[in-house]
Amino acid sequence: MNPTRLLYRGSEWNFDLIRRLHDAIEEVALDELGLDVYHNQMEVITSEQMLDAYAAIGMPLMYRHWSFGKKFAREELLYRKGAQSLAYELVINSDPCVSYIMEENTATMQALVIAHAAFGHNHFFKNNQLFRQWTRADRVLDELTYAKNYLAECEQRYGIEAVESLLDSAHALMSQGVDRYAPRRQSLAAQEQKAKARRDHFEANYNDLWRTVPSARNASDSESVRESNQKTQIERAALDLPRENLLGFLAQHALKLKDWQREVLEIVRRLAQYFYPQRQTKLMNEGCATFTHYEIMNRMYDRGQIDEGAMLEFLHMHSAVVTQPPFDSQAYSGINPYALGFAMMRDIQRICDAPDDEDHQWFPEFAGNGDAMTTLRNAWAEFRDESFVLQFLSPRLIREMRLFLVGNRAESRFVTVDAIHDDSGYRDIRRQLASQYDLSNQEPDIEVTDCDLKGSRRLVLTHRVRNGKLLNKEECNRTLRHVANLWGYRVKMLETDVDTGITLDEFDAVPMP
Image (spheres, rainbow, N blue to C red):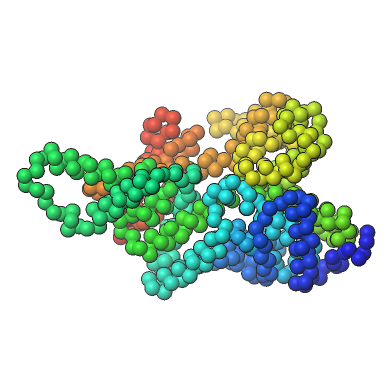
């Protein structure tokens, strides 16, 4: 090893070293790995600030809410007691990409974090199609700053209790505040017609005097009925039912909300939408970042830029990150996304560079192509967790990670092994594991399906029940009260079987007085 090429020795660091580490890592990431990233912005923070950001759902720029303070107290207690360690970094999907590193980190940890967050996550944010579709990276920081300032202003004007009560309801509905499919592209004429229908709808509902004007005496009853039906149809068209985005629907159409309350709901809805791609790509995103830091640190060692001591420290931390506790361990909490994600990236690299006959049979498109980074970059850009597992999980990795398909049915006293390590078993295991990353299987499918515009103003929601998974009654009633508080009138929830259409259960809630 040439000591003149070493970037540092020991654990101490300063800002000049951070800059040199960034430049050296950037050279490997861009020139050798071919990554494409936003400009980087590095910020050094204390462990206290990291705890604060960690509590505020990972966003250093965030408005105030009592739940963040509660989480901060819990995280701080666990950290001080040594029961839980802090994340080494936080990164925001923005342009420039902001990475927060802790001042307590050693020089090697800073190098790992820069490689992991500033280049691994950064590349994934910029290139994955879900992030390209749903996130405007150049606006994220401005929107977060705007949300923080706007909520603070609302607290000054309307009181902390009013704002926090509204946020309680909005946060309760965050998982129902996302658009799961790309917005439909409409012609300009269709957009104008829809906007006009929406304006007519608001005028009809807000102007009570206009609505009480009697119809012309010479008009026949049939004409009045027809006009009324047409008006109702226009109003319903403006509601755009059925609607999957409950929070967005309430922000647009809840009759009793004031303008500032609608804006707060929109802020929370946009926040939920920001996190939606991240929830769909947790495995891939962490796998990409972990693979990236592993490759960069090893290549820097091969170049003589870090010494054996730094490499041993890095490998110790890396091993802790990708450890998969066994199912009977107290530390087990499901499949570690870092472990499975990193293992799959390394497996794809192996299949590209040194495939065996089984790999050629399962992955004829890229087995032996000798270009692992191109294959990985394409996968990072075009897939999400569910489709990535379905497409790239290999039989060899299934064996190495000892994955089996185990059936645990309520009607049976025994647990059964439903798939083993044979040809059909590999496909069953892969299909079942992929379904665990499908958010539509994890979250209830709830839509706004009807709204009584003439009488009681009752709002009707429908939960389409899949595989007999009904909502928890207590939690459903509690959440439905938040919906009723925002809507301002009675709210009804129907649970219908998605296959038969039979109503399985009903819930009803009225707003708090």
